[in-house]
Picture 1: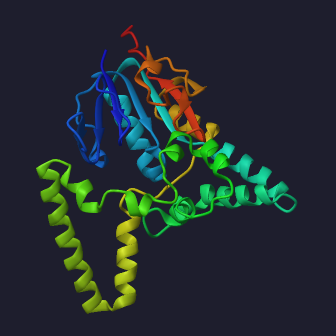
Picture 2: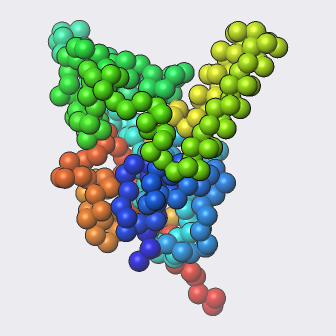
Picture 3: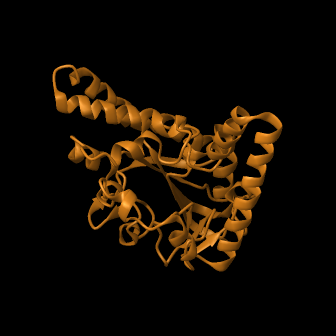
Length: 285
């Protein structure tokens, strides 16, 4: 059985083939997913992608799904995980109804506003979420952990800035090819910023920098609920589409790989989990 993890980030299993835009280790293959998935037709039995689709525009989503379909064998399984727009909206409405009479609910309301909007409108890395999580006084830590799961548990809210590795320490631990690419990219970007500032002024430079950030891959370009995601599966030819619990999957032994549930805890609880099946070949007669 061959399994593919598309846009794996730091969450992957060595039994899978793991691909992402940047390779942080030998188990992950670097490839520009905007140009397709670099594997032949009908190569994989299952394809998994977590919190990638929302970073694509609606126009990019269909080609992405079709690429996943292309590399899947007939009857192959596509599992997609995204932020659950419906669940986020319902939780927002709940905190809105109680915020005026409950101080703790007011803090939860503030967080839900960030969940809804911050990653679509931010213009610097981390946005207002980062400011909230690095605050010296967070009144609703338990609520945030319930929303972010294991991601929140790895954040040292008060000391992330001072005790974390420097940018260079993060870079130098990676492959030499990545270091060279990073340095060249920085030189190109800084040169472009200087030229924009000289030719068009500081306001244009600021707009240029914001545009670069918004195309860096951090921004959410779209959001999905179970209806819209199911419709996308259908549009791209998948059948037997199902909404799943985090620990449920038709991928054999999926729980053993600890991609959505790690040490018995859901990695990102506010997620929507859906699967579809690539149809088998039709008989010629």
